[in-house]
Length: 442
Image 1 (tube, rainbow, N blue to C red):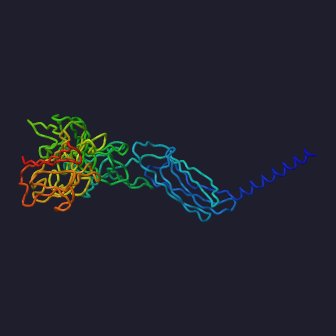
Image 2 (cartoon, rainbow, N blue to C red):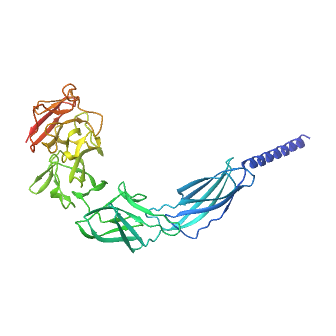
Image 3 (tube, helix red, strand yellow):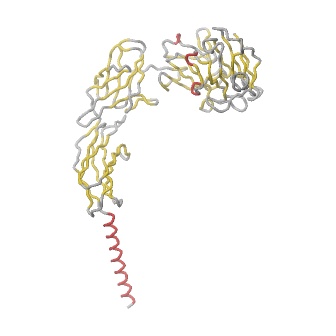
């Protein structure tokens, strides 16, 4: 009798469980979709359209329809549509145009969700191809448009008379019924799609030459190659090319690719010209050299452990200048209180640091207001009690003599001689809080 009672109890429990599951299932609902979209072919950069009827078999109100575009396992585009009512909904997903992605199959996944978070999914296969554009357009900085002809699959060229340096971006037309106009420009250290930031093309001289672009791998040209001692200078900003080099004092610097190098300003603190050669003139170490093609000048900064150097507690490292009345290669590029433009004094050994200026050209003759810092930015600095000088030309501020503590000024009644060279040296061999500034006229 006990056995029968147990079996009856189990049946009742099972019926109750099944009933609860049905009630829970009914509560969750059953979102349903009917697709009205298929693809025989589509193209990268298309706006991929989809159409779907939505409802819920249990009558539960719907919440959202989410659409995802997958390249392999990666979601590359998505959108969300609010589904307040049952019925047909349409949407679009942009098919991103990436470099080095061959023709292949993508997937649109649709996820329908009701207000109780019940869901259903459907997928649409999308065979994607790279557009074979009939032409591209090179848009120059001044807005002039130059048509680039197709010379091979994905390869385009325009050959005209151009200046030695030409800035512009590449534009591809909308391709097919659902295509979008694309722009290719410079971002970071490479050409990418989705920006019209200017690409700096360069050639040996003004004249007729070809400009090329490949829509598969984004290879473009021409770009002149610049190097120092066979180390390539890489584009690091607009008209700026940079490399980090390990250098030794008196080492010969072989500067290649700069046709008008004779017209450049050479910073005598770091480089001296001797018998037709350029030689490094600061102490041994690693330095970041940036070629500024706008100002025709090399910015040279000390490095340490892969970063811009700072003044170490033992007096080694670097000292930086921030403030008014000084600039290299001339005062048109005054440092001011913009920390990104801070000047790195040349380390010359024995915990001494040097900056060479020309009166009225790279330093104002009668009005300066700058100071020495431990880093390229705010932080450690040489206050008025941390540095002294016996110079009769330059004084150090104490907060009461016309300059803030540690800021440099020109002594009343004195001035730098216009066109004359002056060397300012900071010596911290006695400690970072016992620095000595000397000023020598050459």
